[in-house]
Amino acid sequence: MLNYVELLYTLKPKVDPNENFKKFLDYYRKFYIIVSDYLPSFVLGMTDCKGRIWIRRLYGYLKEKVLKHEILHNLFPNASEYEIRRLTDSNFLDLNRFRLIFV
Image (cartoon, rainbow, N blue to C red; front, side, top):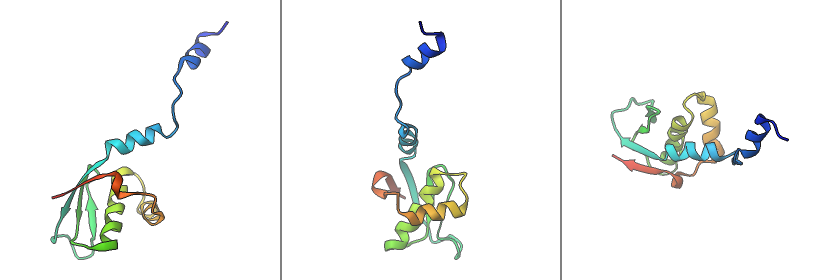
C-alpha cells in the first residue's frame, strides 16, 4: 500500500522540463519598440524590462542585434550585461517568435 506522499507523487502529472520556459516566453511575446532620435549618442537601445524598448534609428544587422539584446534584457532582467551580450552573440533567439510593435 502506498503512503500519502507516494500517492500524491504518482498522481502528479508529468511536466515537460521546458514547459516553464515556454510559458515564460509566451508571457513576454509582445514588445513595443519606440524608434527615437533623442537617445544619448552612446546609447543604441534601452528598455524598461516591461515590454517597452527604445532604439536609435538603425538599419540591417545592427538593428537586429540591438533588438535581440534588448529583448533578452526583458526576458532575463536579473542577468548581467556580460551575460546578455554572450546570449546576444550566441544567436539562439529568433525574432520571428515575438510580436514586435513599432511605435
